[in-house]
Length: 303
Ligand code: SER
Image (cartoon, rainbow, N blue to C red; front, side, top):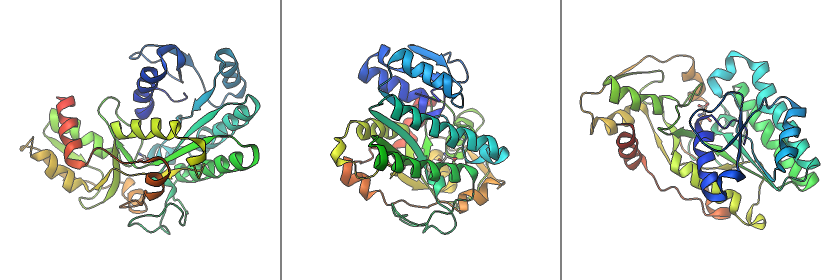
């Protein structure tokens, strides 16, 4: 796994260790991981030779390529974002072909959508003119996934994640980060200044459903997987104001203020709700958590 210290990586490493055994998972990242046990290698995903050395050293059979810069941090350094999010993925695909890697997991995002995309019930196949480098790099990555499947028969599986809500590792540099920050601020300081407007509706998913989706998709029979670019999925959609009301049931003193910044424009170009019927049909995607059950579980764990 690349990017194993990130928001999804941290928890996916443990889930994969549980499933396949601790010694079957090679966690890699630019920075040391102090929290988890198991095999770890420092890895700069842009270093082709080093990635190849790790693949050979451990006889890697599957790659979960999670290393990426997100929508907001990506805008601060577009060229670096392209190198990490796209060039590094192309390295992975070339090496996967060369070393006969059995399966690849590629996380994509609702960031592939843009102002020309229908915002309600966004279809699987639609208009993609993303406004961020993150979105441009991820939609291009999706196209390369499909190309490598069609041309070389690589088994690549992808998911377009909406905002991911979790308590173990805090996301950094994303537009949907408010939906995690608000919980920690609510528990600690009883107040939160949100960087999006109160009525900005965005699709979200809770981490246990992210883990389930990833494991289920990777386990699904190859013949059931009809696309290799990335499946739409969603757990629920919410606005900051609705999330505030849901958290206030447990923390009535919570005060929320709104100071929209540059991220508002990004959020306004993304979907409000997602059509994830293809994922439901191909590999039985079905989220266990709605907003209410997610809020309760988040607060129980953070407290
Ligand atoms: N959470 C991501 C972001 O906000 C969306 O994929 O950038």
